[in-house]
Length: 399
Ligand code: ADP
Ligand code: ASP
Ligand code: MG
Image (tube, rainbow, N blue to C red; front, side):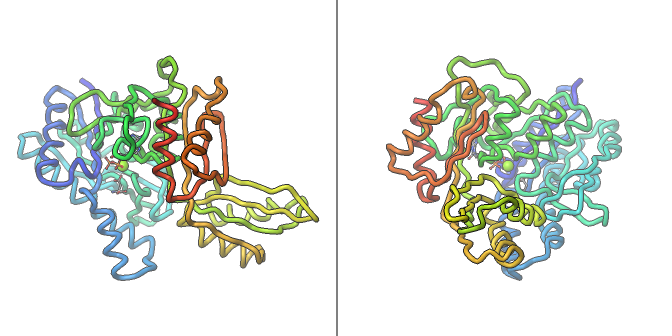
């Protein structure tokens, strides 16, 4: 007998038929003699719909109230799935995030899990019940409901698998696994049999939303092997793990895009020690996550510094730079996107970057910034070119 954690995303539970489809998968796993903990997301577009409802009331909702609102989405799913399981004769108990023992820090809307108290889940399993847990939510020290950020149910599932030392953690979704690019947007994508935690973490962080990046971080930390697979088509998916078989010729594992990017440039700052510290120290104090940084060569004692951050954080960054740092020439470009390629194979092979640049050049796409690490290359380009760029790069590297 094994302990299996199965997570189902929003599209997998979007209506009655999909809920029964999930219930059958879970019941079959349980009937085969396994203990099963299920984690579910809100149905279909429920989370987006709840955000839209809040916007009807105010443009500046309190983060605490947003979490109270958004947590409701997952609570509907757990109750309906538990009812469906019981209809199939499979005894199930639904638990909210806090009932399941998720404790988080105080950061409403982007909370981090600090502890998982597993007593309640374990006692339900001992009673031979399937446990259906609401993903994406927990409770902070003030006994307030918090949520883990978009896509956070993946993280809930991995956390449960890690804490209970589960034998398997399956992430069911609406595609058959992790592909070389988003299979809904790019033609001729290939499904990967396996991918390493490091590569998947890069892909997820660079915009491939098939897995939430924190969930991959957590899976790597606790060595929880993940399987990404379809809830609609029972074929083998993609396994995410520490070490994978070296597939001949597969230098690159995927192409991703992120359109939530703003480029901020501060013109004519002093070309002297301490300037970067002043800028990025202030941004760090405001918890702004800076990504690519580019600095021009100094001339006449002045230089320009550009950096990228999430578009949602650009307004705060601009305020900090103009008001706290007193820079008067700060500009923000919110028409950018980041396209990236990821693959551990590029560490030992040359020429990968030039292929990427060739694809962009052939499509007449201008590169505004470039950033590289051992296993990824990212280019900042015009947002309107993002889909064309991903397809061109994918064609160049995979055909
Ligand atoms: P869920 O609701 O199950 O959590 P998500 O919508 O969060 O599902 O993630 C699945 C989606 O991720 C797919 O429908 C697909 O369009 C998108 N996606 C983006 N990049 C990739 C990729 N490289 N491989 C697979 N799917 C991807
Ligand atoms: N329902 C949440 C979202 O839409 C969490 C999740 O689906 O993982 O982001
Ligand atoms: Mg998701």
